Image 1: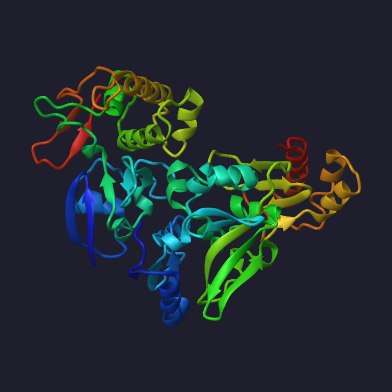
Image 2 (image 1 turned 90 degrees about the horizontal axis):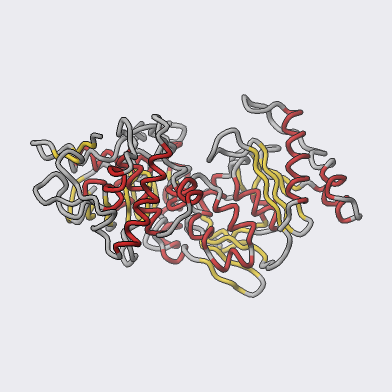
Length: 269
Length: 197
């Protein structure tokens, strides 16, 4: 499969990428690792006229602690997040989620910013970011704005990114030692979650239970009120209206959300 | 557009379309046919090659070349299975890379289609984890499918390669098995490298 023809520009800096985007509007797409975009272009589900490559901008790659936050450059590959001592110590759920994306080759190329911008509700990292209460730094012509994870994901493969904006970094609270759990139900190795559940310190997020990653708020409130993991997990699907597909109907997804939430809470580490 | 990169240690400069996938560049422009197009959807790993950026240490990391644009490889060093052998495999005195030698020794292949990608993934895995457990080998190769389902011998081969590299202390001597003309053969046209059992 061959993508439709396009022009290619390697951006020299994030601001250069922004200027290129400004002139090109919707016809341009940002390219980092390309592991969500290129498969879509090969299937001709996407046919941008121009690709602006930000994948080798060193300003966008790396992981550092800033105060009580971990700041991960948007073009940092999953493999770097998964193996980062800093991430594993301060945000182990994020490192663990990154270690489950695709397979080793995919993790060498795919990036955290790319995965979040792609906003697949079944993906690992959007759910992890919501569970962690993280945020993204978004650079636009007006400067940088910080968007909380739950405000960032607005719909099925949709985010609050405006045309002409790019993600520069991902922020997650540093919570060394906070109990966390992660469960993902798949039919095949390496697959996207049919349903996923992630929990950190009493917060619970679900993957593929709606058009965006969701908080399981009823279950969180029950936990905060002293309910057991099993009792709280019974409420995990409350308020959700998951889609149906060949893998699972709505009732089955709701069942999975309850079971996976219980397991995530019971197997917290 | 013009792209400059290194392929198997040779510097190249080629005019390519931005949409040219790395695997097609390697096969059709460079004439290197080890990287196979299997699924063409980033799943099967038959197109796995190593890519190393400027300033990176080691031999590079494994990538699926069906999901990398050639222009994204500009300035990088790309290694395919053809570039692994210590001396020209199939040539007189040729010597296989330890991982290739271990695949031969342990019969880590059946039809051979997945083998170049499997070998490159294994080389990448061992560069990140030189002494893996069997479970780590199985997880480390999760991005590579063998539709003959010959996984057991592949895993044995990677473990043997790890032991051989560790035992020998230097790459190149491996498990003590050196290549023969029957294992990797370069055809007369010099373009096609095949692996036969």
